[in-house]
Length: 331
Image 1 (cartoon, rainbow, N blue to C red):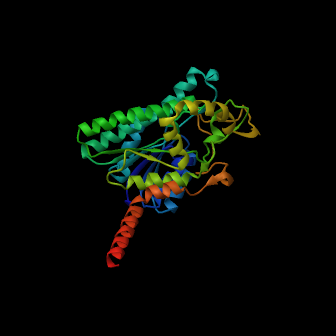
Image 2: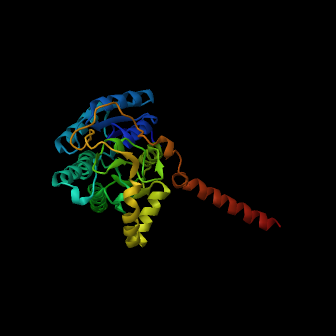
Image 3: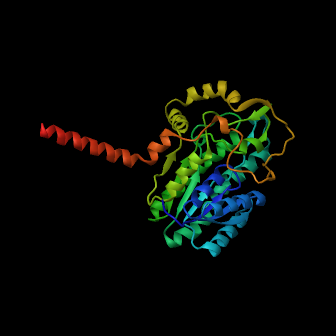
């Protein structure tokens, strides 16, 4: 992993974005923290500095392109050229399509899709003239396999993939050394399930199995240190299964998720329909990286470990084969 990088992280006030900021901080990075909630960003900034990094608090809404552009300039004025840009900010609504409003679809699209577009453009304006830098799109298994009750979010994640694939072609055409990759995430224990707008009768939850955000953040930080990252990374065996299942049996998944997807996304606890949500404005508080599912969440993924250390295993396998050949010849 590279140290002392200059990194921008959107959606850094809580959840995965906050865990990503922590991961970069441990590498001594200088980090721009973007989200709407200044109080939570300042809490994250304190944590970053305690972990060995430096941070700049940049309160803004990612749906505002000029604000993102200004934030990018401020980060470079403070710390120098941006090495890594991580698009992560999101908004969503738990609701059947038949109950969604046009305004809600528009808002989720502006944050969860266009926020990525505006962040990517701000990064490119700085990285392409220098011919270096890495842009990481935080994706989701839902970018490949949609589920019920999150149509706006799933659509935004699909849109990110279309946008990113198109840009990747253009970077190849330009013979650019700017790196672009997507990290597809599993269900995670984050605060989004306590503050997303919800029309379901019960409190929402991620579809189990659930992972701690640090599992995914570790992948993002390691990818940022790779000179030539892969075009896509899948985090956790459930993400692998969902993406592969969509490739080979999408119709079967339609029926299965129609039968199981409603119950799997709800806890057996009634939700308050009038509780604060973060669709139009942030929910106050200092927040943190974790949501309310610590007891149900995995802090380790064998799939992630194997993926991040596959060269070790390949080298170990080659050494084992060589040893067996030598031993056989000595017989």
